[in-house]
Image 1 (cartoon, rainbow, N blue to C red):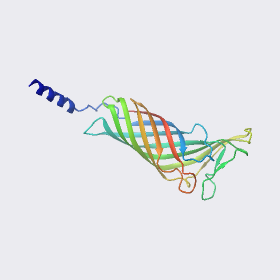
Image 2: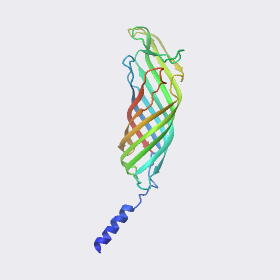
Image 3: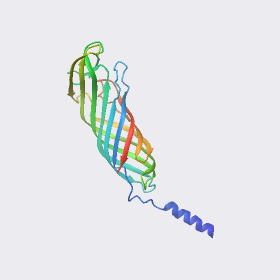
Image 4: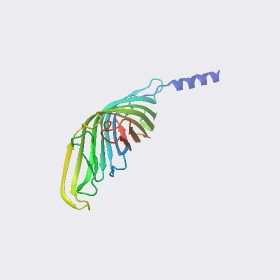
Length: 227
């Protein structure tokens, strides 16, 4: 009889629902990371300190069958800021291709950046080891679907081939004609509490077919989540 009661108590404990009324649902997600272009040819010299910055507001829907699992759905903005070394990017040039010209042996800009911004909808399957308190191990696997908002280059400081400064100024040029208007990004993150490490890989190329290198951004960085 005692064994039967113990089994019933264990069964009731297993079925006990987790109280999620006061938990933090990771509504706000902020990410910053180092970005590189996968698939870029060696003829295009990438610079240092390329980065991504993303910010999303998300809703969290726990699974009834397992409250440690949930679906995160949201909206926000994602951006990539890719740096190049002594490369001219013809974003405003007239032609059928976006040219990346090596200007190492002539006058050139000291710093060149290509920036893209997207309005995005992130979807994420989440696991939380301690969903009541928002602490413990957290995992997330998902995708982001985005639409292009802006694409531009920014060039800073005109110098000669030997690196001597000729003119201190910056120029910004914007055009979206060479870029895919939508992007699909696979995402993964793992961490503890409100801090986690994330990685992302863009599944479709940044540029349209035939207009430039078939390059896809790959990012590794940190995620801060909460609220």
